[in-house]
Image (cartoon, rainbow, N blue to C red; front, side, top):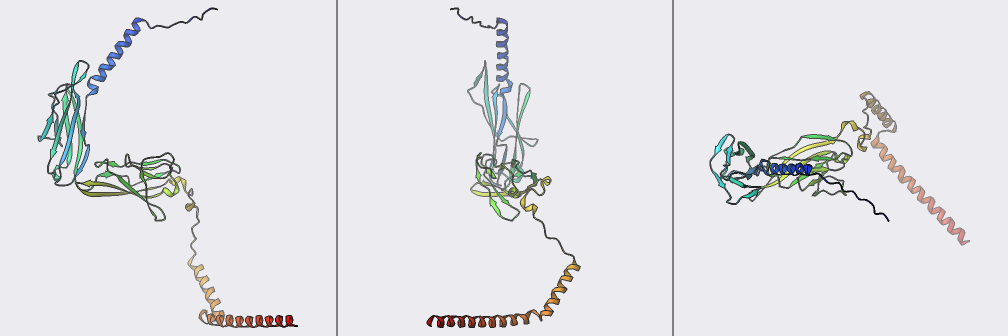
Length: 317
C-alpha cells in the first residue's frame, strides 16, 4: 500500500531573521520609554480643615536613580517633600530601572491649601506630569447633570463625576410621579434583575430597562467620613421619558376632565335650584322623607303580621 506523501512548508532563513529582529525591536520598545510613567495617589482628596493632606507620587521604571520628583501647588514649587530612592533596581534588558517615589504632606490643612497639585519629573529630556485636586472642606465634591431623558427599554447609566471620595458608598432614592419615595438597592450588577439599582463598584445609577415607573427625581448622596465624623453630600437630577413617546405610558393615556364654561355652570346651578324649590327646599324634604319611611315601615309590619296569623289559623282548621 502506497504511503501518503506529506509536505512540510519551512520558513527560509531570511524571513526567520527578519521576524527575530522585529521581535527584538518590539521588546526594546516595550522595555524602554514606554515602560516609564508617573502617577499620583489620590487624584482627588477632600480633607476637613485641621486635618492633614498626603499625596504620593511615583515615577515607575525610571532610568536614573538620581531623577528628581517635584511637587507644585498651582505654579509654585513646594519644598516640604520627602523622597525615597530604592537601592534595588528592576532589570529591563541590560539597563536598571528604578521606581522613584515622593510624598507631599501638609499638616494641618487650611482653606489656603486648596488647589491643584502637580508632580513633575524630567528624564532623557522627556517631561512626566501627574496632578491631584485638593479640597479643604467637610462636604464631598462631585458633579451631576440636572436632568436627562430616556426611551422605553433604554439602558441608563448615571455615573457621578467625583472629585474626591471615589470609593465611598452612594445612596440613591427615587421620587416618582405619585410622590412615593423609594430607596434603590445598593449591590453589584446581576443579569437576572432588570430593575434600577446602585452599582457598588462605581457608585453609579443603573437602570437596565427604562420603564414608565422609572421616571422621576433621583437624589444621590455620597456618604463619606472626615476623621471619625460621617459626612453626607446630596444632589438631585430628573430623569424623564423622551418627548417623542407621548402616550406610551398608561397614566399618559388617561383623558383629563374638560373644563366647563362659566355660562354652562351657571345654567346647571339655576336648574338645580329650580328643582329644589319645586320640592319645597332640601331641609324640609328631609323631614318629610323620614316620616314617609316610618309610615311605610309600620304598614309593611302590619301586613306581615296579618298574613302570618291568617296562615296560622288555616293550619289549625
